[in-house]
Length: 314
Ligand code: APR
Image 1 (cartoon, rainbow, N blue to C red):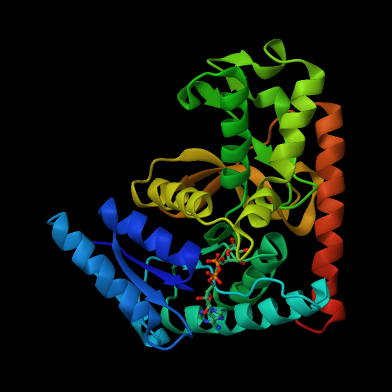
Image 2 (image 1 turned 90 degrees about the vertical axis):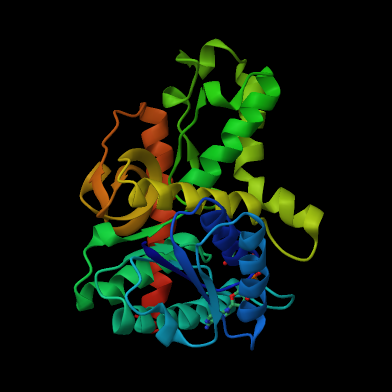
C-alpha cells in the first residue's frame, strides 16, 4: 500500500484524507501544528472506515517523523489572510511555514512526489521547488494544485448554464491560480463540440468571470474560511492519476524551463500525470488572445516570485 502524507489537517487536508481513505487509495498520515487535533480527526476517520470494513490506515500526528518514506506529500499548511494583514505579510508567514514543511520533506521523504495546495499557490510551489531541487528533486516531482480546481469550476458553470451532464464537458483553465487565470475556451468542448458553438459571447464572458471569482464567491458565503470540498477533490484526482499511473492530462502548476516560452516561474499548464509525477508538459497551440492572456498571467506570477527574493525568503 502506498503512503500519502498531508501536512495541514485543516479543512482541505482532512477532506482529502477522507477521500483517499474512502477510495482505499493509500494509507494516510496527517500532520498539523495544532496539538492532538490531527489525532482526533484520524481516530474519527478510522471509525468511519470501520463502518465501511476498510483496512486503510489513517494516522494523525504532531510529529514530522511520521511522514517518513511517504510516496506522496501534500502541503495544505498555511494561514488565511487576517484583517489588517498585507499580502506581503501573508506571503512572508506562509513562505516561512512552507520552508519549515519542506525541510521535513527532504529530511524524511526523499524521492517523494510533492503536491502544493497552500496559497498563494504559484509562489508557494515555486518556493517549494527552489528548496527541494537542491536536495535532488526534479521539477517534475514538485507541483501545484490549481488548474484542476479552476477547470472544475468552469465545467460546473458550463454544465449549469447549458443544462448538460458534467460528463460531457471538457474544460481547461491554465495560468495562475488567481484573477489572471486563463480559461482556454478554444480547447473547451461539450460532447466534442467546441463551447463557442453552443454559447453566446456575453454568456461566455459571465461564465469566465464567475470562474475567476470562484474562490472568492465561496469565501464571501462561508465568511469564516475558504473552499475545501472541490480543492480536496481536485488534489485527489491528481493523486489518483499518479497512484494508478493513469497518465491523465490535467492542468497542473509546474516550474517552466522554456515551455510556452516561459522561464523560471511556476505556471498552470497541461501535463501528463503518472507514477513518477509529471511525465510531460503538453504544448497546445493556443489562440493568439489566449496566449497573450497566459503571458499576462506568467508576468504577474513572475513579479510575485520576485518578492520572495526582495523579502530574502529564497
Ligand atoms: N505545520 C503543519 N500545519 C500547519 C502549520 C505548520 N507549520 N501551520 C499551519 N498549519 C495548519 C493549521 O494548523 C491548519 O490546521 O494548516 C491547517 C490549514 O487548514 P485551514 O486553516 O482549515 O485551511 P484550509 O481551508 O484547509 O486551506 C489550506 O489550502 O486552498 C488552500 O488557501 C488555502 O492556503 C490554504 C490551504
